[in-house]
Amino acid sequence: MDSIGSIHPQVVHFAIALLIVGVVFRLLSLTGRIAFAGPAASVLLLLGTASAVAAVQSGTAAHGPVERVPGSRDAVVEHEDWGKRARNVFLAVAALEILALILARRRKARPAQFLSGAVGLAGLFCLYEASEHGGELVYSYAGGVGIRTGEPEDVGRLLLAGLYHQAQLDRKAGRPAEASRLIEEMAQRFPDDLEVQMLAAESMLLGGKDAEGALAALDRISVPQDSRRLVSRHGILRADALQGAGRAAEARDVLEGLLTRYPDSSSVKEKLANLPKP
Image 1 (tube, rainbow, N blue to C red):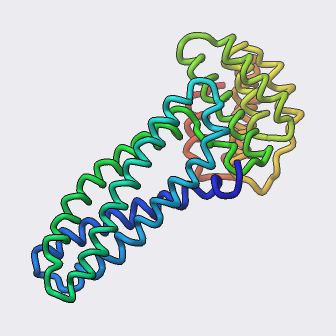
Image 2: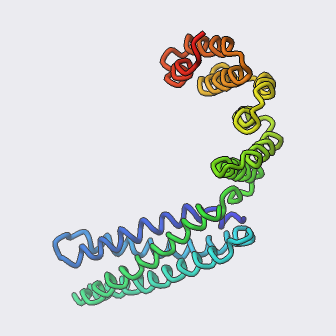
Image 3: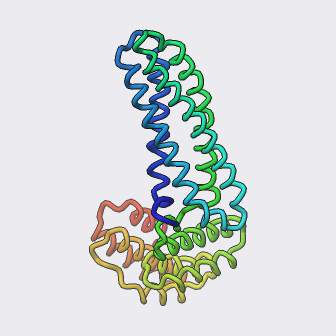
C-alpha cells in the first residue's frame, strides 16, 4: 500500500467531521439567529469538500491490496462507489457555497445557501452510506487491517488475531481439537510471545486435558517479575494445571504465594476459594 493510501483513515475522518459540522452550521445559518454560522459553514464545507476529494484519492490508492483478499472485492467496490457519490454531491455543495459568497455582495446569497443546505443533507446521506460500508469493509472483511503500513509485524498481528478468534469460535462450537490445533499453530509461529505461549498451555488443559504437558509448557516460560498481569496469569494457570494433575496441595501453595504478593487480587482469592479443602 503506497504512502497516499496509508493515510486514508486519517483523511476520511477529517472529511466526515468537517462536512457534518459544515452542513449543520449551514442549516443553523438559515434561521438568521446565529451570525457566525454562515461564514463558519462556508469555511467548513469548502475544507470538508477538499478533504473528501483527498479521501477518494487516498482510498483509490489503498484499495489494491485490500480487494485482492478473497471475498472482499464487492465490499471494496460498494465503499468506493458511495465515497465517490459523497464527493460529487459535496463538490456541488462547494460550488453553491462559492456562488453564495459571490452573490453576498449583492445581498442575493439566500437562495444559494438554501440549496447548499438541501444538497448538503443529501450529501450527508451519501457520507453515511460510505462510512457504513467502510466500517463493514474494515470490521467484517479486515480491509486494510495489518497491511496498511506494509510492515511484516502488522501482518503477523493480523494472523495472530485471526487464529485466536477462530480458535475461540471453534471452542464455543464444540470443536476443541480444531481450537487446539489453531492455538498450537499460534505457539509455533510466535515462540517469543509470552501470552501466546501461556494460551497454548491453557489450551492443553481445556482441549487436551493434558495437565502434565501444560505444566511442562509453563516451566519453559520465563515471566518478567515486574509484570503483575503476566505473573498472576502464569501462576493461576500453573495452579490449574497442578489441580488437573491431582496435586491440589501444590496448587494451593502457588495461589497462596500469589495472594501474599498481590493481596488485593480477587481472581486469586476466587481460585483459592474454589480449591477443595485439604
